[in-house]
Image 1: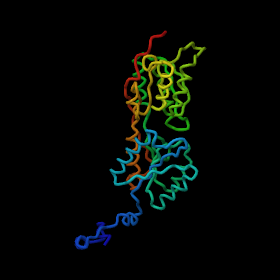
Image 2 (image 1 turned 45 degrees about the horizontal axis):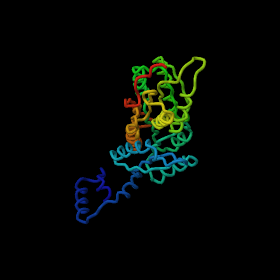
Image 3 (image 1 turned 60 degrees about the vertical axis):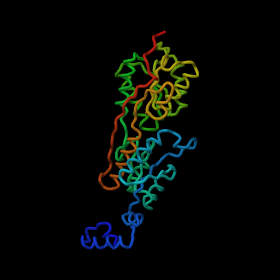
Image 4 (image 1 turned 90 degrees about the vertical axis):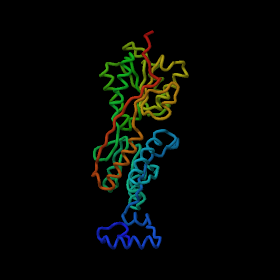
Length: 325
C-alpha cells in the first residue's frame, strides 16, 4: 500500500488508482513520521546557537534576525527548525548522534570562532552542515563581504570632511572580526585617512571602553587630536560609544560621528538613530538553510561557498566633521 500511495514507479497506474480509492473509502491517513523514517529523513534542520554563561543567546538581536531567515528558508523547502545549544566540549559526538538518530538531517551553525578542527571531524563523519558568517576551505558556508558596505561608509565619511577616524574591532577569534578590520585598514589607506584602532569584542561594553581609549588618548608623535568619527565592528559596540559620549557631554553627531555595523535592532530607534553598515543577517539565515537543504537532498555537492554583499544606511549619527579648535 505504501508504495502505491507514495507513487512508486514499481507499481502500475491502475493498481495505484485502486489503492488510493480503497484508502479513501477506509479513511486511511498515511503516517508522516513512518514515511520519513522509511526514507531515513526527519525533515528537521538543527539551528546551532552558542551557549553563553552570561546571557541567553536570543536576548541579542543577531540570533532572532538569523532565525527569522532560517525559518523562512526551512518553510520554503518543507523543513522544520529545532534550536540546539552548542555544548562545545561534546560537539562532534553529540552532533553525529543527532544525525544517526534521525533527530535532524543537517546543521546550521550561527556563530563559530576560527577553530575548524571540529568541523573537519563532522565532514569525516558525513554530517551535512553550513557555517553562517564564517567560512573555511573545505566547508559549506554563507558569509557577507564587508568591503562593499564599508566602502560606502568611508565615502560618506570622506564627503562629510572626516579625515581622522577611529575603529573598535570585534572579537579577533572570529573571522568576520578579522575581515572587517582588514577592510577598515585597506579603506583608511585608500581614502587617505588617519586611523587609530582600539581592540573590542563586538559588545556594548567594549565599545564604551574603546571610545575611552580613542577619545582620551593623544598621539604625541604626530600631535593629533582625537578622531572626528568612530566606526565599530557591531551596532552594539556603537551603542557603547554613544553611551560614553552621552556621559561626557560629547554630542553625537555634532562633536563626533558614529558608524555601526549590522543594521540590527535598535539601530533605527536610537537617539540619534545610527548610521550603519547593512549586514544582511536574516538573508544569511535563509540562504544558509536553503543551501543545507540542497546538500541534504543531493542537489549540491559540498563544499559550497555563498557570498552576500553589505550595504550602508545613512541615519542621524553622522554629520559634517567639526571645525578644528
